[in-house]
Image (cartoon, rainbow over all chains, first blue to last red; front, side, top):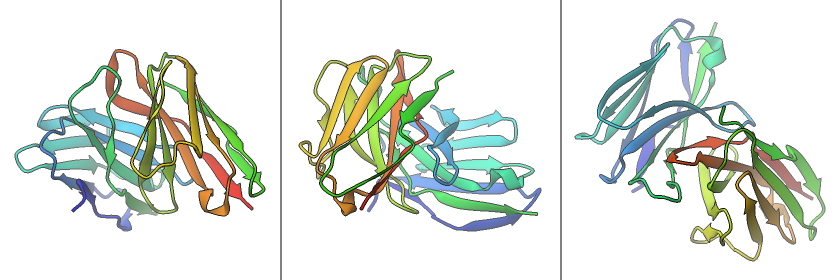
Length: 114
Length: 116
């Protein structure tokens, strides 16, 4: 079993829809949770970063963490064609002085259609 | 802020040659840099963790003699693929952690390596 599970999609939605992307994880040591967006042939771009359980909102994006269920989500409101990309969840364990290793999900490919 | 660059963005080389990829943190100091490879439609696979001034820590299954990593300064890490073979063709991405805030990473744009 992978430490982080993420449905690879592809997920196709109409413009303006609310998108829900999810990851589950098995390692209870994970404390830091991130969502990255990756366009084709580009490096991942950090979208959201959360530490504790609960919701965090940034514009059209809301990240949700439920540590008791080991489940994280990213919601995109009013989705746009420019949101079409692969969304990767990532997480890491206890903070260390030298930097944390990230464990990534496989990524969900999202396509927002006109 | 938190911009990471990579050079070159794309490289094509002959089998048996060595290729060096540079990763720079442009506006911050990166005590730790990470090197990943990514195959098409797959997630990022961590190859090694590079700490400034010390030897890199390689993940299991990654050949340290084949993938040489140097992190000589707080803003520069290099990955050298030695004696490259077609199976080394991949998308190589580096990332850097902010000094004093090591809970997340910022990624470079990636380098696409094609070995003929």
